[in-house]
Image (cartoon, rainbow, N blue to C red; front, side, top):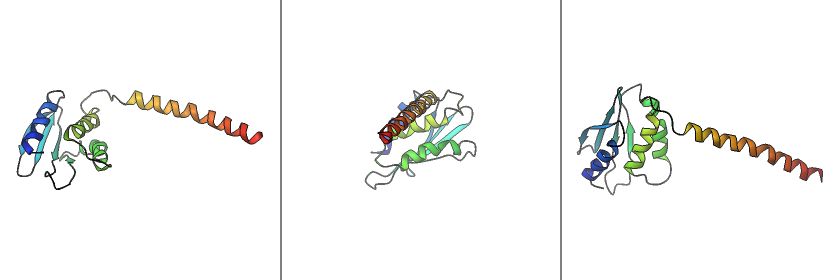
Length: 131
């Protein structure tokens, strides 16, 4: 995808988040984002046709650890779109932005379901072994 098209995707994404696209550098294929209170990161976009992945990073020591989720997502299998990556970054930075983590409840519900199923499976196995 042409860099300008990626920049347009980023601008549209910013309109729905607290982030601003503060700089674009077409020769480096880099986009810099910022949100108060001091949350910043940048995305390096792959050249079309070279097969590389996107890359996200922050020069802020405070922000860098929060990008791990997005970095893991990028390195996982399959091609990712810029919008998908930006959404993952936004989710990663929610605690720094003072926003509730939207996945906390879903994760707890998922764990609760797993915990409930395991004892039932154990009972079924014990019933089979006794017969």
